[in-house]
Structures are given as C-alpha cells and as structure tokens.
Image 1 (cartoon, rainbow, N blue to C red):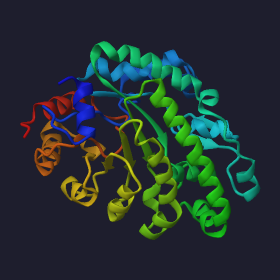
Image 2 (cartoon, one colour; image 1 turned 180 degrees about the vertical axis):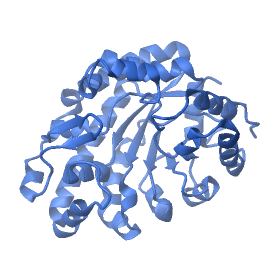
Image 3 (cartoon, helix red, strand yellow; image 1 turned 135 degrees about the vertical axis):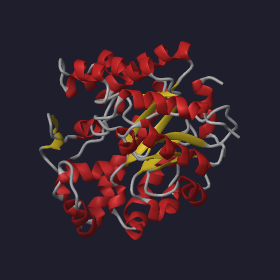
Length: 342
C-alpha cells in the first residue's frame, strides 16, 4: 500500500499492510534545517508565507519514511482574524495582548471567512498537495477545538490553572455560549476550506480540555465540539485529539471524530475499548530523548497492546520535543513499519 492508502484505511478501521505512522509537530524545532530556516524569518512570516510553510511541511518527509505530512501552521491564527492581537514572542510562545475578559469583548469578535483570513495556509495546503501527489502520501490539515481556542483567547497565553477561563465559563454562561458558537463556526469554515484545498484528513486539537472535569466537559464543551465534528465528518476523515482526558475519553469520543487521539496516560488497548473507534497514539514524547535500547520497549508496548488490530495510527501522545535526536525518529519509524502485523 502507499502511505496515503495505508493512512486513510487506518482512519476507516480497514485492513492495512503495516501500521501507518506520523508524528505530531514533525515539521518543527527538532530538525536542524527548520532551525536554520527560522533563524532567517519570524514565526509570523513562516506562517504567512505559503512557500516557507510548504518547505517546512516537507522537511521531515526528506528524512523519514512517514505516511503523512501535516501542514505547517498553528492553531491560533484564526483568532487574529476574529479581532485578537496575537503575537509569537521568541523564547516565550504565543501571547494575546487583548484577552477576552468581558461579555462585550465576546460580542465584538468577528467571524470572517477563512479564505480571507487564512489564505496563506490554504495556499500552502494546495502547494503541498501537489508535492505529495507523486509520493502518494497523505496530507493532514488541522484546527484548534473551541475550548482550547477559547482558553487561549481568555487567558492570553499558557496557563496551569485556567482560572480566567473557568471563571468566565461559570459566571457568564450565556456569553460563553456566544463565544463557543462563534469559535465553532470559524473552525467549521476553516476545516472545510482546508479539505477543499487538498487535505486528506483533518485533526481537531483540544490540547487543553484535560483541565476540565467530566461534568464540565459534558456541559460546557461537548455540544460545541460536536457541532464542529458533525459538520465535517462527511467531508473527510477526522482525528479528534486531546490530552489528559483518560477519565472521560468515552464521552469525548461521543462528541465525534472517526479517529480518537490518545496520550500516554492511558493504555491504548483500554482507550480503544472505551471509544470503540480507530485510535491514534500513544507514545510519551519524552521516550524519544533516551537511547534506542530504552525507546524500543516503549514502542513495542504500544504495538503489543494494540495487538495487530486494524484502525491504529502510530503517533506520539503529544508533540515531538525540540531536543529529540534525529536518529531516534528514524529508528522509530522503521520499527513501526517493520513490526509484524496481523
């Protein structure tokens, strides 16, 4: 099978010849060629220049026998089009200089079409699609989920407590609903445009939703994630990704998605039983920092637990770390592709 055929078959839970593999944040800081490019241009320029985003997207495919590429982008730029002042601060990360702290600020947010605000990323998808055709590899697009985007918009950046987000959610439920409806509408439009531009599959990142209890997820988040996922599931395969949600992975799966992303905090066989869908994951990114003799048993554990079942895409439980040795990635990809299947 080609990488594209293998990847899409796994998304559907169908028979594959070997387990497909791609790695979250595979086009990023662990690659020396990425660091070289980024030494010349800012993060904003890399995101807003289709040629640069295309070059970065293709970098890992020159090194590793991966089955899919994921477009180089970020989950936050759609917030800029809505009226938020997003800045990528070197050595710090993303920062929103006008975070949402009032109901009026929510009501002032715009909902412009993605083809106006995210044109550079959509053009990069078209360019990468052309590059991938002769290689027969899959292309993933992605977007942030409503809760994760709302959290960034309210907190203004990274947080450990999500105090501002939860306080707004609890004290202004009507404004929270308006915010989540706006965000989910923007996300639906953006993902549809990515599919139209050439993405074979899209991933919804809810990286921060693990900060919530099961009750809060069901009440304040699930309806909006379901709105997004149900609107795009008939257009292309969809991966629904989250972290630290093992306690309510079943209800998260119920929000939608053809494939459920699994972090390293729950055994992947247990996760598969909970969701009864194809799964993706679930290697701890930190295992790639050790020598192969220690990394291999962790990879083997994932493969043994999934037991040769179809409907598994091998991946890390979150993004690859900047300190990751290149050779470890190469050995991991080769190990997964050569693992006895079936």
